[in-house]
Amino acid sequence: MKLTYHVVDLPLKHTFTIAHQSRDVQDTIIVKLSDASFYGLGESTTNPFYGMTISNMSECLENIRPIVENQKWDTPSELWNLGKEIFKDNPFAQCALDMAAWDIYAKKQGKKLYDLLNLNPATIPTTNFTIGIDILDKMVAKMKEVDWPIYKIKLGTSDDLSIVRELRKHTNAIFRIDANCAWTADQAIEYSKELKKLGVEFMEQPLGKDDLEGMKTVFEHSELPVIADESCIVESEVKKCHGLFHGVNVKLVKAGGITPGLRMIHEAKKLGMKTMVGCMTESSVGITAIAHIAPLLDYVDMDGAMLLSADPAKGVIITPEKVTFPEGNGIGAEMIEK
Image 1: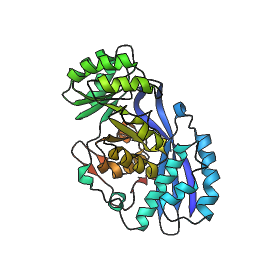
Image 2: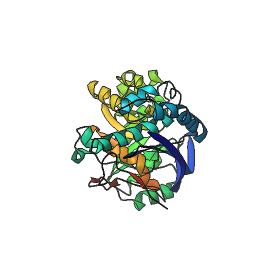
Image 3: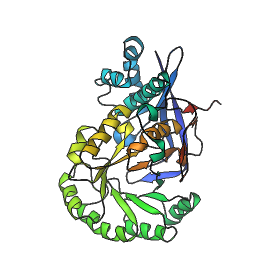
C-alpha cells in the first residue's frame, strides 16, 4: 500500500463568516491510498479554531506512513486503531486517512460504500444550504442566489433576531440556525420563542461547548430542539450530551473519520437522540463521503462543495429532490485532472 497526499486551495464563492472566523479560501489535504489495482481518496480541511494546520496534519501523515505502507491491515477500522496514538491530537488528519481507507476497501469489495454499509440512498434527508454571517442585503442575496428548501443561517451577532426576521420575508423555506457558541442560556431561551414563530426547525450549539449547566437549562426551557456541534466532537461526548441536547451533529473531520463517526451516530440513536452529520467546506471528496452515510441521519449538512467557486473534484451531485452518486464503487469521488 502506498500513501500520498497533496494540498489544495478551495476558493469560496463568497466570504464565509461564522461567529469566530471568516475566510475566502479554504485549504484542504487530499489523501490517496493506492496499491497495484485500486486507490482511495480522503480529505480534511484545516481549521484555525481547532489548531489544525497543513503542517501538523502533514507531520501526522508522515508518522503513520510506516504503518500504512509496511504493516498488515485489512479494514479501515484496523488502520484507524493502529493510528490512534499517532492521531490522538489530530483527528482531522486521521479523518482524511480513514476516508481513503474506506474508499479503497469498498472498491476492493466491489461495492459502493452505502451498499457495503447496507444503507439505502433513497432515504437521504435533504441537505440544508448555509448562509454565512454578512450584512443583511448580502445574506438575502446569497439566499436568493440558491433557491433551496432548507437554509442553515449562521448567527452570533448583536442583532440575530433581526437577521432571521429579514430573511424570512424572502422565503418560505425551513430555517435552521447555528450560533457557534455565541449566546448565553438566557439569550437562547428567549430567542427560541421568536425563532419558533419564524419557522426555525432547531438551534445548533447556542452556548459555549463547556457550558453544560447552561445547556441543561436551555434543554429544559427552549421552545426549539437544540443540536450539539462543538460540544460533541469525540465519541465519549455523545453520552455527555444526552439530556443536554436533543441531537448531535457529528463532523467527520473532528471525530477522526467515518470509522468513529459511524459509532457516534449509532450511540446517539441508542440514546434516542436525533442524528446529523455536518461538513467543513470540503471539496466533493469529503462531501461524497458524507452522502454515503447520510441514509443513517435525521438531518444532514453537506453543502460544502456547493459553496465553492471551483471544485477540484467530482463526486456526488446534490439537488433538493435527490442525491446522485458517481458510477464507480467505493466513495467514488475523483480529482479533476488539470
